[in-house]
Length: 147
Image (cartoon, rainbow, N blue to C red; front, side, top):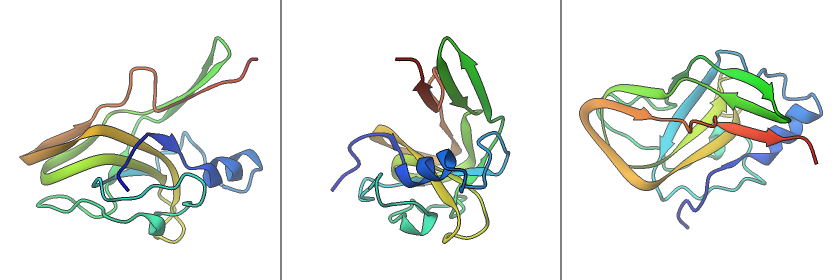
């Protein structure tokens, strides 16, 4: 099954809401890795990085991805927005990258909590160049909290 949509991993959201995630969305300990279209996402059951399969490989690409910086939560007009600086992989050669997987970098694949998947819609590649995941102008995640 191919990647069909962006989304948030539900088990991590649940842990955040019941205060067992022990992670701050604004902390600078987040990372983003890239996967191919052969990764089968499951927003209900996948919760840790060891659930991720088919991570991209290539020259200059480090397994586990790169650190995401400038994370920020804002509240305005009844909407919570979580955003960060665009994710940049410096001088990499990768092919068939289909999505970025954002996670809390706790320390190991068995403890790194998955947060969200960004679907690129079409596969992307880079040859010995910077690869940038440009986050939506509206943020990585928005939650409207007013009925």
